[in-house]
Length: 154
Image 1 (cartoon, rainbow, N blue to C red):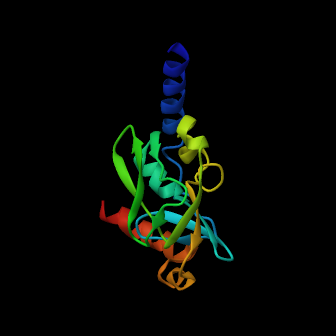
Image 2: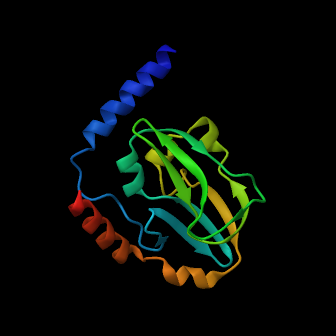
């Protein structure tokens, strides 16, 4: 229990220490949904996670609800949720297809979504059923502009 309290305080301290940074990082070779999920494409395979921008707004992630491998996902529809100290937010799939793998590490280390949103904090791997859906997603430049405009409204 004491180590959990220390970890919580350390996380809070670390969040404060990066609060004044500039805009959240955006990875150039990924595609982005307006609901703040990213997708990395490799042929018909897609790796999905939430963006640095999303995790930054959520705060410290304490739980990730994962789908089962084999579950069907549809573009724009929810497949799980991220619970943080601030809120619970649905995770929407940027592509349609079948979940072929889930990041089981998130069950014991949900904070990977904060610490490494584009690498170790990935959420699912999907076998895509329609690669044409990628055309409706944003590239890194479009997503950066989208986030800047969204943040300006708040």
